[in-house]
Length: 136
Image (cartoon, rainbow, N blue to C red):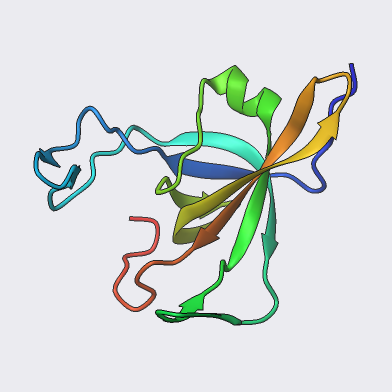
């Protein structure tokens, strides 16, 4: 079986959303105040930061695009029992403390031997660049 390789992988620390431990508003079905998160998990990933700041024009106004992505192998995620979701928090990329959130997931590297994608791109963005405590 052919497995895709990562170029220059670094350890990525992620805090997954714990939906069952988060207090929900029954009417709106959204978290109240603070989302509960699981313990940090370290997964090897290939980081790519975008080189420019672009805005995506929409009818509601300009939206920031992602600031980059981390490429993960499904074999690494499955081995650790991790299921990535939008809203998961990335707190460390290699030796760099960050505070970014996964905003989109895109399966990549479809191999016939695997019967589907071998990797997933987790696009990330900083939600509150001026207010966040880095890696805390």
